[in-house]
Image (cartoon, rainbow, N blue to C red):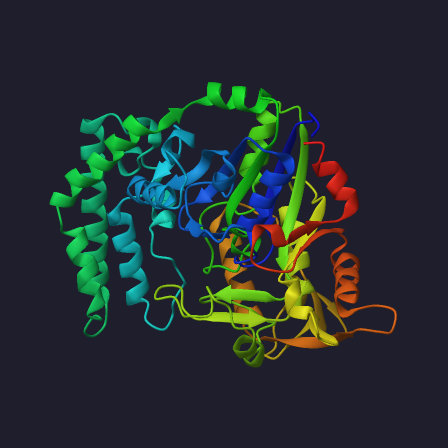
Length: 475
């Protein structure tokens, strides 16, 4: 193993569930990385299936925890209560003293049960017009971060007086919002609203939440920029693991069905630049051989038959908050769009295509490279690249940072809901297998080389091409 320093960034390019976690663990193993820098939000759980059969959905700990790597949380929204439960579960799976391997930046935001309560209340009262949420309150915490009295950061965990005051402020603010929503709701509210309201009214919970934050300060290393400076100078490699897929981006995604954290690691790349990181930066985009979406929002390439056919152990069941799990064809229109806005910070060096085993034994595979708009007359050329009567691309609108941009993205979502896929079929030939034809197609259409594949759910099922094997072995 060489001594070059690498900072490997793993981004999902679609709508989540791309298998980012197992890809991160594979890179930790290949690079012998000492740390996984986790960013985003704890609501994005990554299901790891270790080679020895152990498996777990990780929400705070990095996917390298089974390889002995440290976890560093920065640009991350956390929940101390859930973090402790995760640590207990890891100990049951044979990971000794996991909290000793955890480092949290002092500026990380924290959620409380009251953030979760109002998030779920909002979603229940939306009825059929669901936004789609995991119900953990991460978005609420991010939106409240502009108000110091309604936001809690890791650097404050040891100050019990401050924590008690802020947690109570949060509870009262969320309770007031929930009561206002109920007053404006037409008809009888759904029964499940009242279980969430009971959480928001529970003043005794404030002290218990403060206790958990205090325990976090005692048991976990809370760090500042001096730690990050040392970490980035340390010999060896780091892997960045971010929650969510790029198409959930808060400003470029299909609003309102988006997250409030940056799923493209743009904040991480800015931090690396500001801290003068001197190592090599590798950026890998992860995609499936088909697209999926859990919950509300556009999935133009959706196909009911494909959804019924491709049964998945962990994803097919409907999530109580997110909604149904849908499957669609590999969609180059959507993926080229995510690549375009994600590459504002740094171009991708390669792609890892997962779920390639789905193509094994097949002679043909459907892909989507254009859409047909089926709605009424609209100003399509403002939002899309057109060829005759087909949509062949989605235009990236510069983020102006104002409500007008959000409204534009909302309009884009409405238009996409009126689009249907134009399906193209790839086939095998005498000299080329379907898998080879598909990977060649991906590289040509997305203009990023495929550097690795996954033919199964375990970490060891990830394979990197020979050229990249050489690069990774230098780490």
